[in-house]
Length: 306
Image 1 (cartoon, rainbow, N blue to C red):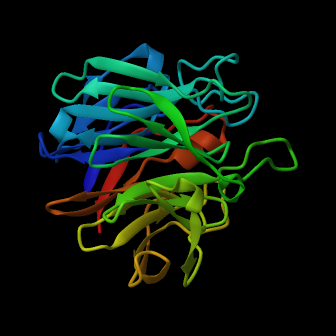
Image 2: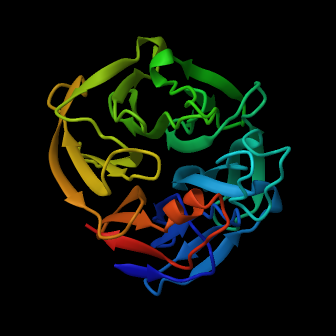
Image 3: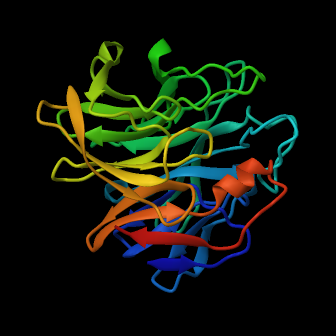
């Protein structure tokens, strides 16, 4: 276990960086991306004021790129989750940022918030060609961003759109996403725990994966080389459990079964990173941050090996 330090950093996304043999973490509060080793000390790699908050993170070592979703996260009209938040950008300023993996220098920022309404650019997956696929949890859309930075709507389907609650708050729908060998994506709906299989060359053929049990509150996911799908679940805005699920499929992800479910000792685990030395889950008290509308924070974070 790595006991992280840092003032009110609240990372929601993290990943393993094989070029550094270290973790990279984001920050909902400060919009930074930092390198974290075994000592738990975040060393800032990216500090770009335009990010506001960073979400999902992926490394692309082949192209020496670091990709991160960013935005001004909406958690109610009076929320203030990030230090750079402003009323006019909250829930409307979202996108994908591409950095040089070695230096942390910004190479491109891709705006994904041009359509009306509220947006939440959440997680992302990469295919072997370097295309990125970004989930918008508030609209049910998945965007595709080419290596050159051209963005388009890859998929919109009502099955992925969670709509709004009785108080006019957007529900969190499509969330974690991974690329699978065989030419398809797997994504999950946070609110219902449904998994979906999306063919890369025919996204309109999206279909629900039959599960042995729903993954309520499923947030970040990772797909191992042996075909095991890992999903971190939390209760930030769900009736699920705080846990790490492992799933397997024997029919190309037309169906899947839960093979293990391990409770998290920490509250609000948000995502999973697979490393050569084991599988790790990140927790950083984002439940406190969201629950207070940003008025309460906690220091530090935990990266726990499972």
